[in-house]
Image (cartoon, rainbow, N blue to C red; front, top):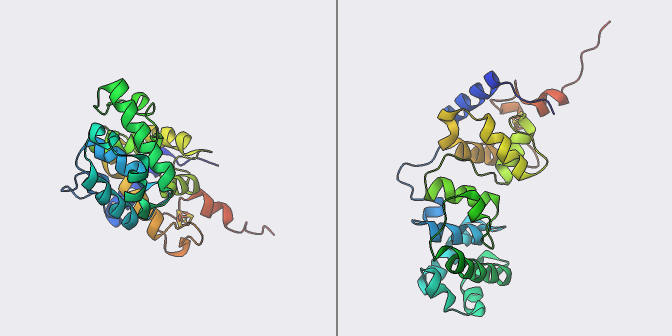
Length: 223
Ligand code: SF4
């Protein structure tokens, strides 16, 4: 895959900034979670779950407990019952209990502020760690979900075989002015235009630079 040039990347972000909604300045965090601990749990619950189901599960869980220590007083079965709407509830309940136990044992119950430390917590992968770093702690990073991963690979913005590789490349190749909103612009673009099954290339504002689109065009005949 040929990479976009730096000039093209600048243009890509200018176009997205004008055509896609960014993050509301009043937003408290992903899905409205106000603090790092609850941001972590909301991320664990959101795996393979629709936003509306995650919101229901998150609300039910935080009605039962709001701190790592009170969460550990619940049984895995109680947690699983509360978070049932978001699916994979037995696995996620065990992750939540493991997350809380490790948070207390290794970090005195305080969510750490580095990626390496966050990744030591059960249930926290690279995407969750980046979400927590950016939205709970205001650090400059870009979380890569399935939509961002797809757009980065198709366009040539930051190709990578894995989401982690794409995340590294995306952060390195995104201009400073775009880092804060890039996650939101790319997700909205992936949901509205560069959708998974049938991307809307005909109306896509990036089709003149998109490597995947250019590679699919017929080669002109030379007579
Ligand atoms: S041209 Fe098509 S594949 Fe490329 S970014 Fe646009 S919608 Fe996605």
